[in-house]
Amino acid sequence: MGEVLGFCLGGTLALDLAATGSDVATACYYPFPRGFGNPSVTKAPRPVDLAEAIRSPVLCHWGDDHPYTAYVHPGAGHGFLAGLSEQNADSKPARESWARTDANLGQAR
Image (cartoon, rainbow, N blue to C red; front, side, top):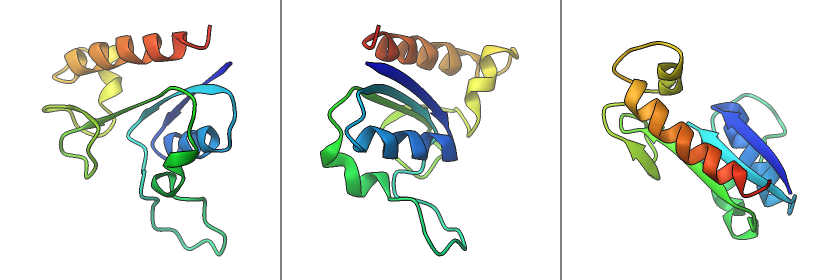
């Protein structure tokens, strides 16, 4: 089993990859499960429409001011993982979410 980690748009694409049947443990920070607006003629699939096809471990993180619900970190904003390298109000949710992410991806090891 492989591992994939995605942020924002990359998190959305990581969820799409998980839905292809790829044998990957997936962790995402602030993905767009309902897709996102863009002018492209060909759009990436919406992960929410592919959710039933996902068979591998998936973990997602959002701050509570983000428009989605899943594992929510109260008080954390978009981009809160920067709290790992910068001491700020997002440091605690960054550490907590990273520990969960490492454990989730560790299922692939």
